Structure formats: structure tokens, C-alpha cells
Length: 285
Ligand SMILES: NC(=O)c1ccc[n+]([C@@H]2O[C@H](COP(=O)([O-])OP(=O)(O)OC[C@H]3O[C@@H](n4cnc5c(N)ncnc54)[C@H](OP(=O)(O)O)[C@@H]3O)[C@@H](O)[C@H]2O)c1
Image (cartoon, rainbow, N blue to C red; front, side):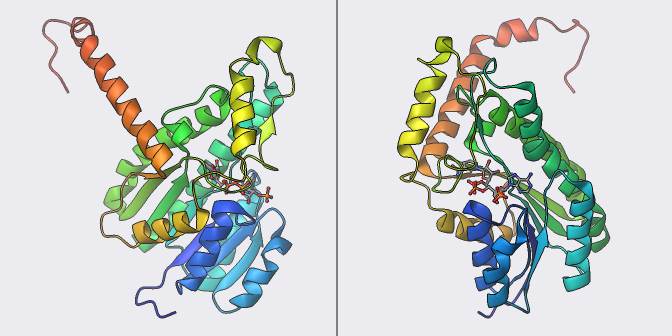
């Protein structure tokens, strides 16, 4: 496919789901790609199809040596990195009391610290280029959380907080940041990838248990199409003014709106109390 402005992408977690769909779409679009996976042999077929523009690299985002090697491979192969997509991640379902300390830390290691590792390793490259786009895969749960997702959503909230500040820090350096917030999409997220609480407790069966049953029920028939999400991401990356937050799917869109409305209503209701805590002489910053 002819592409007047080909870009170099580095995508984490390209084995299945969003990462795989985006990897295929990017190559079809005529861009170059360093596709990464914990088991890189899963990428063989893709790379064989695009020998000139695709490279496969082993990458667990929690392993700094592999992170650095992936970035080095991209530079050796293509000389630059235009788009970093921090897609690698997975859900952890369970009430806060039900999940183990080890499950909590492992989830944050991938969903938050893995993305931070990638960003901090790619930034020197993008700063030198004076251009680049960092796309961080959050979730609608990273803006409006679900019960049972305290840790998963918590890690995504943290990723969004990091991304918001980063957006302002790197804008003057020519680097863009976009947070992606999908609702339920048909990937391996609920199936093989979902980590489930180690200690199930009766007390949470009516709440978190019901949410888990709901997830299992919709698995395979989620409304979101990862191929369409991939096209949306390519469009955003090629737009002159990409958004800080990109919501994907009608479910996420409606949840996002409801959250804004409830935040506004709560803010209005408590405005006077909030204002009353300043010194009389203090001005607003
Ligand atoms: N699908 C949804 O409904 C949904 C909604 C909101 C947000 N998301 C987010 O979308 C992203 C992609 O998930 P998906 O829906 O496409 O699910 P998926 O099909 O399960 O894909 C997850 C990918 O992340 C990789 N991964 C997990 N831990 C990793 C690690 N430590 N290092 C490197 N790669 C790792 C997996 O690799 P392996 O193949 O080796 O396991 C896989 O490639 C995640 O960040 C997820 O939180 C998904």
C-alpha cells in the first residue's frame, strides 16, 4: 500500500488482541513495525509476510534488559521510532481483599511500571528526533472504574495520571501523548489473559462475583472490534491534533459521559465547602 508519510511503530504485546490487530493494520498501511511479544515465535507469520518492514523482538515489558534491546533493535533496523504503543497489559478481577499481594504487584508491574519502563527508554530517542507519539493503552476502567477492578483499574488510573503530566512535559519537545480507553473488546482479555483472585470470599459473591459472571458471559461477544480500533488508532496517530484521551466503543463513551456528569454534580454540590478552606488572602493559581 502506498503511504506518503510512513512511520516506524514499536508495539508491546503484539501476540493477540489489540496489539496483534494494530500490528497487522500498521504493516498493511505501509508503515514499519517492531512487533514485540513474550513469545516472539507467535509473530513469525506476520514478519514473514512483511520481511522489509517488520521485525519481531522478544519483550516482556517488566524486563528492562529486553526493553532496551527492543528499542535498540528498532533503531538498528529503521533508524527511528515514531510511535510507541504501550499495549501490553492484562486484567485482575477480584475484590481488594480477595486478590493476593503478589497478584497486585504483578499487575502493577506490567500495566503501570512496564509502560513507564518503555516510555523512559524511548524518550531519549524521540527527544533527539524532536518528534514522536506515545500511545498508552488504558481502559475505560482507568477513568471510571468497576467494582472488582480495584487493582487493574487502579493501575490504569495511575497510567493515566502519568500520561497527563507527561503530555505537558513533552509537548514542547515535539512529542505527543494519547491515552486510549476502550470498553469491552473481543480479545483474549477476559479469557486466557484475565487473572482471577486467589482467595474467593462469600461476602463478595453478590457484587464482584456477579461482575465476574457477567464478564464470563460476554466473553466472545464483546461489542468492540479490535480491527476497527486499530484503524481508529492509525487515524489518530496521523491526525494533526491527536486527543489526550481517546475513548473507544459506545459502552466506554457512555460510561465516560456519566462519570463527567456525576463529577460535575458532586463538584457543584460541594463548591462552597471547597472554597471555604482557603486563607482569606490567598489568590487562585
Ligand atoms: N479487550 C478489552 O476489553 C480491553 C478493554 C480495555 C483495555 N484493554 C487493554 O488492552 C490491552 C491489550 O489487551 P487485549 O484486550 O488485546 O488482550 P490480550 O489479547 O490478552 O492481549 C494482551 C497482550 O499483552 C501481552 N502481555 C501481558 N503481559 C505482558 C508483559 N509482562 N510483557 C509483555 N507483554 C505482555 C500479552 O502477551 P502474551 O500473549 O505473552 O500473554 C498479549 O500480547 C491491555 O493493556 C488491556 O488492559 C482491553
